[in-house]
Length: 96
Image 1: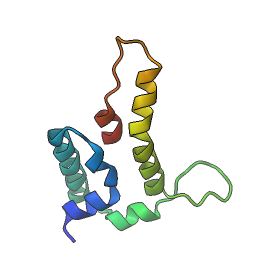
Image 2: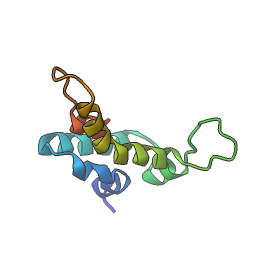
Image 3: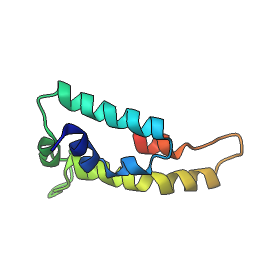
């Protein structure tokens, strides 16, 4: 599997980024990060989330995925409840 495919696999929310340029840059950042790191995608699946919650078996990657899934809906909710002078960029929430 290519590194690009691995990044797409662990970051399925990339497909929700509406701006194609930002989507590609985010994907490339993930590829570069793996190129420069001794860690591989499998390592991210094994890193535990450090919540100090007894018995918590959620991995760091699973938590990141939950945040990614919640980001689009969060952007809509934030936009609904803020003043007109504030905008919420869904793509930025997903990217981070």
